[in-house]
Amino acid sequence: MSLTITINGSPVPLPEDPRVSLLDFLREHLQLAGAKKGCNQGACGACTVLADGERVLSCLALAVQYQGRSITTIEGLASQDGLHPLQQAFIDHDGFQCGYCTPGQICSAVGMAEEWQRGVPSHVTQDLNTRTIRLTREELRERMSGNLCRCGAYNGIVEAIATHCGEVAP
Image 1 (cartoon, rainbow, N blue to C red):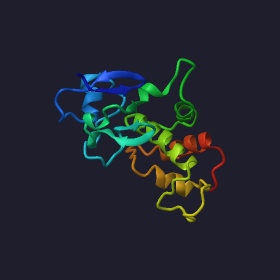
Image 2: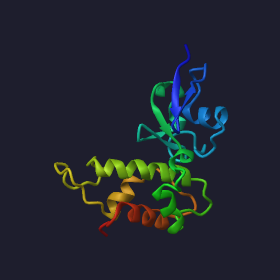
Image 3: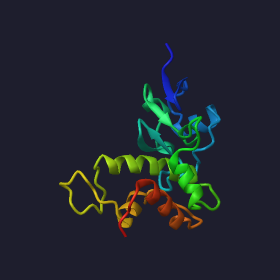
Image 4: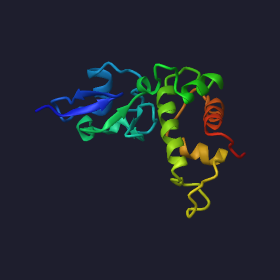
């Protein structure tokens, strides 16, 4: 019996070797090169993908840990109707320069927006008892702090996410 994982909506058999990281499984076994191998230590966020909608650093995860779960990569965010709204926002606000971190940034932003909408607090959330968290620039930057951009495109990235999330307080 083969164990499977769902990648971008399609079931895929897991690798036989349980030591294969989720990142290597995506890149080397499935040729999905969107998630990048940056630091390979979980510090840069370039490898961020979504597991059942939650942000995951795929370099620190084993593929077998996600048996039966759904993984979405940057390749799986767009639909036949077009780009994911955050992909379009990154283009509209020039949220990238070299583009190496962009897939991880966008996947992280998708997960971050869903966390914020569910009322999950961050380290800078003032009122931990509220279900409606006011998204400020500080809150947004804190929530995206696990994704590093060495080119310094942070202003465009913040504008793209702020546009996607609606009104963001200064």
